[in-house]
Structures are given as C-alpha cells and as structure tokens.
Image (cartoon, rainbow, N blue to C red):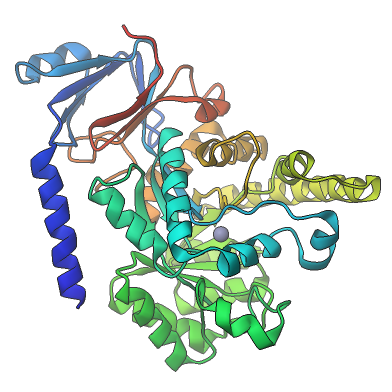
Length: 451
Ligand SMILES: [Zn+2]
C-alpha cells in the first residue's frame, strides 16, 4: 500500500518536472548574506538551472558562465538570503481568540482547537491549510515543519499537493497526528464525547505497545517526522513510552520532535533520545549541557513574546479593565523569562532553531505576516541578528536533516531565495518585509522595482 502511494507521488512529481522545468535564470542583487558565516558578497549573482543553484559569485563571473539565452532578474540593491525555514507551525489551525469568560475557564487556545476539530471537516481544514501555506510562502517561508493539528493527514496531503505543483506553498515536513498522553489537551472535555473527536488530531499513547502502534499509524500517511506532546495538561508521557516512540520512529529513519515545557518532560525527551525539544521553557543548566553533548536541538518558539497576546486580544475581543491589567502583567513576566532563556541557550552552546508556533488568527495580517513577526522578537530578547537568521536558515536545515538541500545559497541546493530591501543585520525587522521570494527556481513574488 505504501509503495503504491509512493509510486503515485513520484509519478506526479516527475510529470510536473517534465511539464514545467523553469528556464535557466540569473538573480543579481546588491548583496548576498550567508547566515552561516555572516559573510557578505557584494554585488552578487546566483545562477539557477533546473530549480537548483548552479553557481554563486560576482555578477561578471556568473554571467560569463551562464548559458546563452539565460533570463536575468535584477534585484537592485536588495540583500539576498536563503529561503526562510519556520521549524514549528500549524498550517491547518487558525484559532480565533475566544471571549474573556471562555479564556478564564479553558484558556485562549482550547476553544478554538475544539471548534476546528469538532465543527470543521478534514477537507475544510486542508483547504484552510492551502491558504496558510500560500501566505507563508509569500512571506518568504520556503520550508516549514508542520507539527500537528492536521486533521488526520491533512498536512501530508497538502505537502504532496504542493510538491506536485497543484497548489502553491512551502516545502512541508508533515507530522500528521500528534502523540499525546491520555488526557492531554482535552482533559477539560466532557469524557462522554471526547473520544469521538480526539482522534482527528491526536493519537493517545499510554504504553510502549500503543506508542509503537501510534508511530506506525502516522507512518502510514508518509509523515516526515513524529511529533510528541509530552506534557500538555495530562499526566505526561513516561520514559518507557517515549523510548518506544523514538525507537520506532528512528527505525523508520524519522526524527522525533518533542513538545516539552516542564523540567520532567524535558528530561524524559533527553533520556529517550528525541531529536529536538520544542518550547523547552523550564530547561535547566544541566539539561542544556546534556542536550549539547547529545547534539539535540532546542527549537525556540517565541510565540507569546513581545506583546503578542495583548495585540491579538485587543484586535479580537472586548476585555474588562481587570483582564487587561492581568495580561499586561503576564506579558512583563514572559519578557523576563524569555530574555533569560535566550541568554542561557546562547551561553550553553546548544544547537538551536526557531519556530513561530503560529496557529492564531492575527487580525489584519496574513498567516505569513503573522509568523514573520515572531523572529525579530528573538533579537529583542538578546539574540544577535546573525543568530536569528541562522536559527531560521542553516540551523533549521540541520535540525530537520536537510542541510544538503536548503538553508544556504550554494551550488547543489534548491533555488529557494528571498530578498529584503535593507540590511537585516542592522535591522532584523527586515524579515517582516520580504520583497522577493523564489522557490525551486520559480518566482513567487517580486515587489522590488525593476532594474
Ligand atoms: Zn505547536
């Protein structure tokens, strides 16, 4: 069965490449910044053939080596960067902030999640995902990790549709359903009906046997990696269960992304040999050291940093003065904790990437624009601009095991490029104003004046 699916997928991809291989192209720009080294090539040119980068160098050299009849795109003074990688997102979920009374009872996230799962069909969600995917790509995200909330296999289906050229979007690494401990996420739910809707987004695991079966169920949908939520609300995933998940996933050559916020959950993920810790808020110094020694990635998710919640609350709901004051206080506490976390990660020398964890409706912004606001805040939290760029390019590529394909502008890699008008090192908010996007050698958008 799986071989048949693979065959069908390959047939689509081959058919598409034969039909629309883009012409060789030279992209010229005032500057090209390599996030790995911080080196700037100025001026710069990139030769692209068959959707891949063939040569990078000075415009005179690249144009000399280019085949006759090559198409040239001149981006003027702009700065070229590798296509951006959002290493933690949720394309099939767009949570609208609930009312103040509901937030008090269920939190801001669960009501929207429940509505998505219980009121929308999987088909409706995957079409929502198609919109979010296009919006992410338009903002410069050429690769994303979709870590759960996928309406069974919606993210895998969306990935295949994008790869086949049927809908525009980034390269997606899909995790399909999240593995959770019993009671995770939906513990506030009436247990008489919870079972019926839970399984659209989650696979519950309480024993090593269930863990292996859950991994196999996700593998059926050709997932790219396994996502485990170790400690969301419920009783938590034990080390034997987590070890079974990691063993089964690694046996199939899939990485395991571990959502873990508490010290205990982080320890379980480390002991079991997960590949990345998502969020990781309460990580200890000893754990950071262990992660560095094991080569584990810390995937930062600065979703609620920089006044994000007050901003979407303000534009979404009516709030009482007391509620408003409480959230303002929470924002300040979050800021202090986040600044400290960023500094500790840098000092520990642990490998890191960053993801928006975007699943929120942000009035007035597309999904891509909302996600792009989540990376400059890392700089506000004390991370140097170059490290922010590394987190969402080369580092993320290494975390997902795609360092040979994406994350840098060099020969042999996919021609995934973005450009900003200014210097992102001097002003990292340039990431919120991506003006040029190319994926697979094809221009997605170009708002830079023609030169
Ligand atoms: Zn998430």
